[in-house]
Image 1 (cartoon, helix red, strand yellow):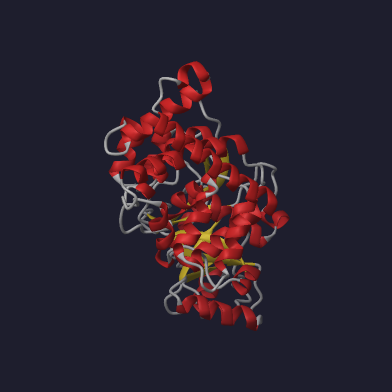
Image 2: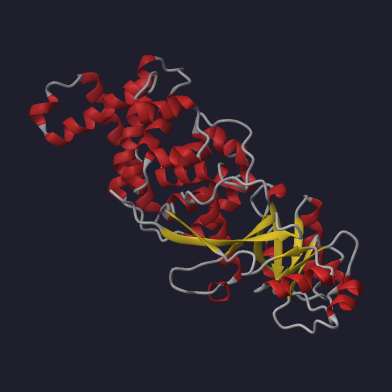
Amino acid sequence: MSVPEYVLLAKQAIYRANKNPLAYELLFRSPLNLSAVDLGGDLATSQVLVNYCASVSQQTELVDCPVFINVDASYIKHHDALPVSVECVIVDLNNFQDDDQELLESIDKWRAQGFRFSLDNVDLTAPPQALLQRMDFAKVDVLDVDWQKIPDLLAQCRGEGVNWVAKRIEDEQTFERCLAAGFDSFQGYFLARPKQVTGNSIRPGTAVTIRLISALDQPRITMEQITDLVSQDPKLAMQMLKIINSPLFSLPKQVDDLKSALVYLGVDMLRQWAMMIAFLSNGNAHVEASRYVLQRAKTMELMVKRQDEDNDLAPKAFLTGLVSGVDILLNIRPSLFLEQVQLSPMIGAAVMQRKPPLGPILQTVVELEQAVAQGDDILIYQDSAHLGLYSEADQWVKQVLAALRAAS
């Protein structure tokens, strides 16, 4: 069965003079044909980040180049950072004023963390000097410029260490002019048109996400408590796994369980991702699909604990149950999801090939689900202990969903 995909965003390459890629710019796209201005700067930035990092697409492969992310000046002033690895991004600043002291101070704080900046749509006849002193890149729209003045204006504006990008290059003649004028990097239809990135977005419900934001503000919250909370929404759990495996992070090792993924993100990044996700979530989580997958995951966890209460396979079993249900939950093939998240081989082998140690447990639970669906006559052939654990998991899921409804 083919799974429908949606336009998540677009990306366009920025090239060096030798036409090798320098970076990619991520561009906002909306299925409703809204512009980033229509949606608002903060939401547009959030949507690009969430769609690029937390959606499943075959077009967000890891690349060696950093990405430019368009960020409104208000976002810089109201946030401490972007929740990504600093070496992977270049903050492309727009809607700016050179005399905005609050913006200048905010940029200094971001730069102290290692973020690099690009200034979009620089007017060479009236360059914003205070901002340019803080920039690594500066972009100039060359579609309508006075080519006789460009070389001199560019020479006057060149600051130490600033890479000047000529954008909207639409033909070879313009490209050659930009080279001769002294630009360092180049972007436009002549070199590469924006390429749509399509895929499947993962949208969790809002209730757990909002509870997570609240929990993260509690001074004594533990990572175990955070993990328990995220585990209550399988879509949110899958989204967090996808985020840390996105091109904007450098995951140091394979993930064995949800807690290790959340520990890697850390509380500050978790809070910011949760806030962005809450802003963008439509709240229309499929409750029955969530119930089904949660019960599978919890039953697997209980089966492992029944063998040994201290067995460290229990959290891995829960995660295996969640991943095995992405086709039910997200309408995404498990094989595609596993290609894009760096889970331990044990989990992938269990989901795709039913290999030990977790594969047989998953198969047992799947068969149990089928027996329950077929009714009482089939259930008499099932292990009574397994049925008891399945029932216990069902009670846990009911409690979780009741708590979520109360919080909605």
